[in-house]
Length: 229
Ligand code: ADP
Ligand code: ADP
Image (cartoon, rainbow, N blue to C red; front, side, top):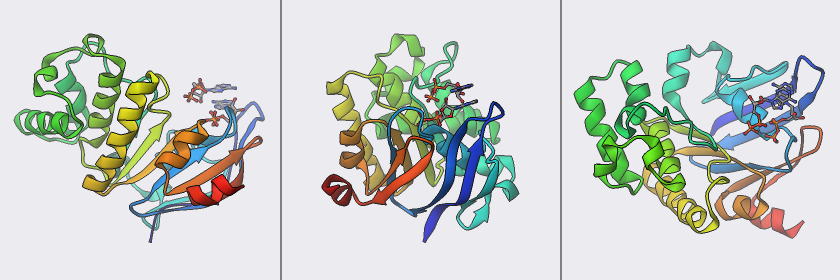
Protein backbone atom coordinates (compact mmCIF):
# COMPACT_ATOMS: atom_id res chain seq x y z
CA UNK A 1 0.00 0.00 0.00
CA UNK A 2 1.23 3.49 -0.85
CA UNK A 3 1.08 6.48 1.46
CA UNK A 4 2.01 8.91 -1.32
CA UNK A 5 1.95 8.61 -5.12
CA UNK A 6 3.22 11.03 -7.75
CA UNK A 7 1.63 10.54 -11.18
CA UNK A 8 3.17 12.32 -14.19
CA UNK A 9 3.96 15.33 -12.02
CA UNK A 10 5.59 18.43 -13.51
CA UNK A 11 6.35 21.73 -11.89
CA UNK A 12 7.30 24.73 -13.97
CA UNK A 13 7.69 27.94 -11.93
CA UNK A 14 6.27 31.17 -13.37
CA UNK A 15 9.75 32.27 -14.48
CA UNK A 16 9.94 29.20 -16.74
CA UNK A 17 12.20 27.05 -14.52
CA UNK A 18 11.29 23.38 -14.82
CA UNK A 19 11.85 22.20 -11.24
CA UNK A 20 10.26 18.74 -11.54
CA UNK A 21 9.83 16.87 -14.79
CA UNK A 22 7.54 13.87 -15.29
CA UNK A 23 7.81 12.45 -11.78
CA UNK A 24 6.27 9.05 -11.12
CA UNK A 25 6.99 7.61 -7.70
CA UNK A 26 5.26 5.65 -4.93
CA UNK A 27 6.12 5.99 -1.26
CA UNK A 28 5.08 2.82 0.60
CA UNK A 29 3.21 3.15 3.91
CA UNK A 30 5.63 2.98 6.84
CA UNK A 31 8.74 3.54 4.71
CA UNK A 32 11.47 6.09 5.14
CA UNK A 33 11.91 7.33 1.59
CA UNK A 34 14.77 9.70 0.83
CA UNK A 35 14.88 12.23 -2.02
CA UNK A 36 18.56 12.80 -2.78
CA UNK A 37 20.46 14.71 -5.45
CA UNK A 38 22.46 17.87 -6.05
CA UNK A 39 21.12 21.32 -5.19
CA UNK A 40 18.43 22.58 -7.56
CA UNK A 41 17.23 19.21 -8.88
CA UNK A 42 13.68 19.53 -7.53
CA UNK A 43 13.75 17.70 -4.19
CA UNK A 44 12.23 20.49 -2.10
CA UNK A 45 9.67 21.31 -4.76
CA UNK A 46 8.60 17.64 -4.86
CA UNK A 47 8.32 17.52 -1.07
CA UNK A 48 6.29 20.72 -0.95
CA UNK A 49 3.84 19.47 -3.55
CA UNK A 50 2.88 16.68 -1.12
CA UNK A 51 1.51 19.13 1.46
CA UNK A 52 0.44 21.69 -1.16
CA UNK A 53 2.91 24.38 -0.20
CA UNK A 54 3.60 24.18 -3.95
CA UNK A 55 0.97 23.26 -6.58
CA UNK A 56 2.03 21.07 -9.51
CA UNK A 57 1.72 22.47 -13.02
CA UNK A 58 0.35 19.14 -14.20
CA UNK A 59 -0.08 15.61 -12.95
CA UNK A 60 -1.52 14.27 -9.74
CA UNK A 61 -0.39 13.59 -6.19
CA UNK A 62 -2.29 11.12 -4.05
CA UNK A 63 -2.13 10.63 -0.31
CA UNK A 64 -3.59 7.34 0.87
CA UNK A 65 -5.20 6.97 -2.53
CA UNK A 66 -6.87 10.40 -2.41
CA UNK A 67 -6.00 13.31 -4.69
CA UNK A 68 -4.44 15.96 -2.41
CA UNK A 69 -6.43 18.70 -4.10
CA UNK A 70 -9.61 17.07 -2.78
CA UNK A 71 -8.45 16.89 0.85
CA UNK A 72 -9.56 19.82 3.06
CA UNK A 73 -6.67 21.92 4.36
CA UNK A 74 -7.23 21.07 8.05
CA UNK A 75 -7.21 17.36 7.31
CA UNK A 76 -4.05 17.70 5.22
CA UNK A 77 -2.36 19.61 8.06
CA UNK A 78 -3.32 16.95 10.55
CA UNK A 79 -2.04 14.15 8.35
CA UNK A 80 1.45 15.61 7.69
CA UNK A 81 4.15 17.09 9.85
CA UNK A 82 6.81 19.25 8.22
CA UNK A 83 10.36 19.75 9.46
CA UNK A 84 12.77 22.13 7.76
CA UNK A 85 16.42 22.95 7.99
CA UNK A 86 16.35 26.00 10.24
CA UNK A 87 13.79 24.34 12.54
CA UNK A 88 11.38 27.23 11.80
CA UNK A 89 10.54 27.76 15.45
CA UNK A 90 8.77 30.93 16.49
CA UNK A 91 11.35 32.95 18.47
CA UNK A 92 8.93 34.64 20.85
CA UNK A 93 7.15 31.46 21.86
CA UNK A 94 8.45 28.94 24.38
CA UNK A 95 9.39 25.42 23.37
CA UNK A 96 6.07 24.05 24.70
CA UNK A 97 4.08 26.74 22.88
CA UNK A 98 5.96 26.02 19.66
CA UNK A 99 5.20 22.30 19.87
CA UNK A 100 1.53 22.93 20.67
CA UNK A 101 0.80 25.32 17.81
CA UNK A 102 -0.91 22.90 15.44
CA UNK A 103 -2.91 20.97 18.08
CA UNK A 104 -4.12 24.30 19.49
CA UNK A 105 -5.14 25.46 15.99
CA UNK A 106 -7.00 22.18 15.62
CA UNK A 107 -8.93 22.92 18.82
CA UNK A 108 -7.08 20.93 21.49
CA UNK A 109 -7.29 22.43 25.01
CA UNK A 110 -4.31 24.28 26.47
CA UNK A 111 -3.98 21.69 29.23
CA UNK A 112 -4.03 18.63 26.95
CA UNK A 113 -1.71 20.16 24.38
CA UNK A 114 0.79 21.12 27.12
CA UNK A 115 0.75 17.62 28.55
CA UNK A 116 1.30 16.10 25.11
CA UNK A 117 4.04 18.59 24.30
CA UNK A 118 5.88 17.52 27.47
CA UNK A 119 5.53 13.86 26.52
CA UNK A 120 6.86 14.67 23.06
CA UNK A 121 9.93 16.33 24.54
CA UNK A 122 10.76 13.02 26.18
CA UNK A 123 9.95 11.09 23.00
CA UNK A 124 12.60 13.05 21.13
CA UNK A 125 15.12 12.83 23.93
CA UNK A 126 14.90 16.28 25.53
CA UNK A 127 14.43 17.08 29.19
CA UNK A 128 11.00 18.41 30.17
CA UNK A 129 12.67 21.36 31.88
CA UNK A 130 13.53 22.77 28.44
CA UNK A 131 9.84 23.34 27.73
CA UNK A 132 9.80 26.83 29.23
CA UNK A 133 12.84 28.02 27.27
CA UNK A 134 12.84 30.09 24.11
CA UNK A 135 14.40 28.67 20.92
CA UNK A 136 17.44 30.97 21.11
CA UNK A 137 18.25 29.42 24.50
CA UNK A 138 18.73 25.98 22.89
CA UNK A 139 21.60 24.49 20.90
CA UNK A 140 21.15 23.89 17.17
CA UNK A 141 20.63 20.16 17.73
CA UNK A 142 18.07 20.80 20.46
CA UNK A 143 16.22 23.23 18.18
CA UNK A 144 16.03 20.58 15.46
CA UNK A 145 14.68 18.08 17.99
CA UNK A 146 11.98 20.57 18.98
CA UNK A 147 11.21 21.03 15.27
CA UNK A 148 10.65 17.27 15.04
CA UNK A 149 8.49 17.28 18.19
CA UNK A 150 6.38 20.07 16.72
CA UNK A 151 5.90 18.14 13.50
CA UNK A 152 4.75 15.12 15.52
CA UNK A 153 2.39 17.09 17.76
CA UNK A 154 -0.82 16.35 15.87
CA UNK A 155 0.32 12.71 15.58
CA UNK A 156 0.37 12.75 11.76
CA UNK A 157 0.90 9.45 9.91
CA UNK A 158 3.28 11.22 7.50
CA UNK A 159 6.39 13.24 8.28
CA UNK A 160 8.01 15.46 5.61
CA UNK A 161 11.59 16.47 6.39
CA UNK A 162 13.59 18.94 4.30
CA UNK A 163 17.34 18.75 5.06
CA UNK A 164 16.51 18.73 8.77
CA UNK A 165 20.02 17.88 9.97
CA UNK A 166 22.27 19.70 7.52
CA UNK A 167 22.81 22.78 9.69
CA UNK A 168 24.09 20.92 12.77
CA UNK A 169 27.64 19.70 13.36
CA UNK A 170 28.57 16.15 12.28
CA UNK A 171 28.57 14.63 15.80
CA UNK A 172 25.10 15.95 16.63
CA UNK A 173 23.93 15.00 13.13
CA UNK A 174 24.87 11.36 13.74
CA UNK A 175 22.85 11.42 16.98
CA UNK A 176 19.85 12.92 15.23
CA UNK A 177 20.04 10.36 12.41
CA UNK A 178 20.08 7.47 14.89
CA UNK A 179 17.21 8.99 16.84
CA UNK A 180 15.18 9.34 13.66
CA UNK A 181 15.64 5.65 12.84
CA UNK A 182 14.63 4.79 16.38
CA UNK A 183 11.63 7.12 16.25
CA UNK A 184 10.51 5.57 12.98
CA UNK A 185 10.53 2.11 14.57
CA UNK A 186 8.62 3.23 17.64
CA UNK A 187 6.06 5.52 16.03
CA UNK A 188 5.48 3.69 12.75
CA UNK A 189 5.35 6.77 10.49
CA UNK A 190 5.77 7.21 6.77
CA UNK A 191 8.70 9.57 6.36
CA UNK A 192 9.88 11.47 3.27
CA UNK A 193 13.33 12.90 3.88
CA UNK A 194 15.16 15.35 1.59
CA UNK A 195 18.97 15.57 1.59
CA UNK A 196 21.81 16.36 -0.81
CA UNK A 197 24.08 13.97 1.13
CA UNK A 198 24.27 10.49 -0.42
CA UNK A 199 25.80 9.00 2.75
CA UNK A 200 22.84 10.24 4.75
CA UNK A 201 20.43 8.95 2.11
CA UNK A 202 21.73 5.38 2.12
CA UNK A 203 22.06 5.38 5.91
CA UNK A 204 18.48 6.43 6.55
CA UNK A 205 16.45 5.31 3.56
CA UNK A 206 14.53 2.09 2.99
CA UNK A 207 13.98 3.56 -0.45
CA UNK A 208 16.17 6.14 -2.14
CA UNK A 209 14.93 8.37 -4.96
CA UNK A 210 17.91 9.86 -6.80
CA UNK A 211 17.02 13.14 -8.52
CA UNK A 212 19.10 14.51 -11.37
CA UNK A 213 19.54 17.96 -12.86
CA UNK A 214 16.39 19.16 -14.59
CA UNK A 215 14.09 17.62 -11.99
CA UNK A 216 14.12 14.11 -13.38
CA UNK A 217 14.13 10.93 -11.33
CA UNK A 218 17.33 9.03 -12.20
CA UNK A 219 16.79 6.04 -9.93
CA UNK A 220 14.38 4.81 -7.30
CA UNK A 221 15.66 1.77 -5.45
CA UNK A 222 16.89 0.30 -2.19
CA UNK A 223 20.05 1.83 -0.67
CA UNK A 224 21.99 -1.35 -1.56
CA UNK A 225 21.02 -1.03 -5.21
CA UNK A 226 21.85 2.68 -5.26
CA UNK A 227 25.29 2.02 -3.79
CA UNK A 228 25.97 -0.58 -6.47
CA UNK A 229 25.45 1.95 -9.28
P1 ADP B 1 16.39 21.19 -4.49
O1 ADP B 1 15.49 21.04 -3.31
O2 ADP B 1 16.76 19.89 -5.13
O3 ADP B 1 17.60 22.05 -4.19
P2 ADP B 1 14.34 22.95 -5.53
O4 ADP B 1 13.10 22.17 -5.60
O5 ADP B 1 14.52 23.87 -4.36
O6 ADP B 1 15.59 21.95 -5.63
O7 ADP B 1 14.52 23.79 -6.85
C1 ADP B 1 14.44 23.19 -8.14
C2 ADP B 1 14.62 24.27 -9.18
O8 ADP B 1 13.53 25.15 -9.14
C3 ADP B 1 15.86 25.13 -8.99
O9 ADP B 1 16.33 25.48 -10.26
C4 ADP B 1 15.33 26.33 -8.23
O10 ADP B 1 16.13 27.46 -8.44
C5 ADP B 1 13.96 26.47 -8.85
N1 ADP B 1 12.99 27.09 -7.93
C6 ADP B 1 12.67 26.69 -6.67
N2 ADP B 1 11.73 27.45 -6.15
C7 ADP B 1 11.43 28.37 -7.10
C8 ADP B 1 10.52 29.46 -7.18
N3 ADP B 1 9.69 29.75 -6.18
N4 ADP B 1 10.50 30.16 -8.33
C9 ADP B 1 11.30 29.88 -9.36
N5 ADP B 1 12.19 28.87 -9.36
C10 ADP B 1 12.24 28.12 -8.24
P1 ADP C 1 15.37 25.27 0.43
O1 ADP C 1 15.99 24.50 -0.69
O2 ADP C 1 15.84 24.82 1.80
O3 ADP C 1 13.89 25.38 0.35
P2 ADP C 1 16.17 27.65 -0.89
O4 ADP C 1 17.16 28.68 -0.43
O5 ADP C 1 16.46 26.81 -2.07
O6 ADP C 1 15.89 26.76 0.39
O7 ADP C 1 14.77 28.35 -1.15
C1 ADP C 1 14.24 29.29 -0.25
C2 ADP C 1 12.97 29.83 -0.86
O8 ADP C 1 13.25 30.49 -2.11
C3 ADP C 1 11.95 28.77 -1.18
O9 ADP C 1 10.66 29.23 -0.85
C4 ADP C 1 12.09 28.53 -2.66
O10 ADP C 1 10.84 28.13 -3.24
C5 ADP C 1 12.49 29.90 -3.15
N1 ADP C 1 13.36 29.82 -4.34
C6 ADP C 1 14.40 28.97 -4.54
N2 ADP C 1 14.96 29.16 -5.74
C7 ADP C 1 14.29 30.18 -6.32
C8 ADP C 1 14.38 30.86 -7.56
N3 ADP C 1 15.27 30.52 -8.48
N4 ADP C 1 13.53 31.87 -7.78
C9 ADP C 1 12.62 32.20 -6.88
N5 ADP C 1 12.46 31.60 -5.70
C10 ADP C 1 13.28 30.60 -5.41
